[in-house]
Length: 455
Picture 1: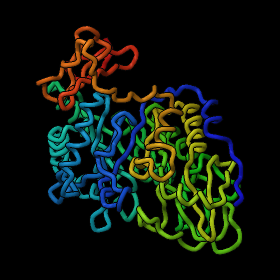
Picture 2: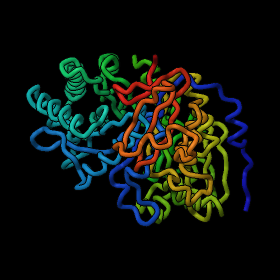
Picture 3: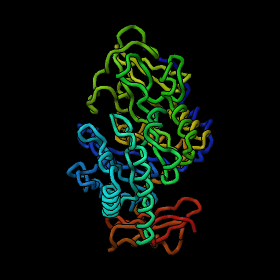
Picture 4: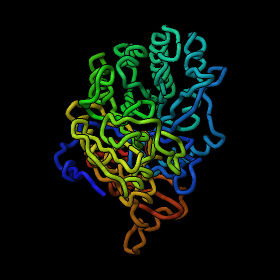
């Protein structure tokens, strides 16, 4: 088996500067629960210390313009996810809304009139508060396509302004922390121009997740990488813009502040079926490789499926795009590795972006069973590369009789409690056991919010 030697991820990581970005936003999908065996993923699989924000994907909008769940057990999954904030009070959670009905974005009917937008906004605030989410994510991805009326772009701007105002008004009236407002947005310049009034919506978002992936796939007639950093020498015409550098540059040029832009990193690869002996970029193809045994969808493999593939495949590195691909037989997959993630983090730091978002937690090797690199190997490496402090680990229950807090949690409900002897720490009571947790450097524990914050 031939392998192209590429720089080790550790060597690349050592060249990175500490990130100025502050957000690592991770998506989880409510359909991952239907994958077989050890690939099944639910809220209980989320590591509460891995990401700064977790976006639960997704909810939808009904015919009465109200936000509603999709799966029968969404309520249960919401509860499981948001209970993680009792373990990590700094974790933020958002609910994503979107989807398609009868071939049309569910947003299109709702945004048509001020009255229908008002109904949606009121229902969204109530729903988010009821289920303890910290914000709303609009999966506003390609609304300017598929025959949508031209006024959709302007109506989206109105929706964003009205949501921002309503979130502020609700927070002022209730004295609660204002709900976050975010969106998943397109990456290709023509779609950006058709779908968003960038300079008008920019002030109203806390951040946006640019979907810098799916630049190429089996719909093309030749191989191309899913999420390349730069243009390749085989990219011509409109394909010259099918890369991260072109996408983010376009958002910046149109007025989106860098610190509100989050770079998208996929935990999956796009597959092709080769039709000749050529295996490099631009090699002729016809359709996708076989579907993965766990994701069971033609055209892409999760990272844990890629791990199994590359044990017998030939792996190559595309230097000009800073991403890898692998081939075996007539199967070709372009994916992200530790090395490509390190290169992308270096790029987002150089461009002063606000952080990164991951699609998705459930397609990383979340259980550590496939790649043998521990749990969440891609997202964990991303976190470290971005310069976040090491994750805290749950210490063992305090059992020594010499320790005066050993029995602190005896008879107390599960939850977080202040430590009067040391404001930089706090107690976490769980099933009668006492755990001592440390705030991040410079922060102290505030019982009023059950969180670590500035003094």
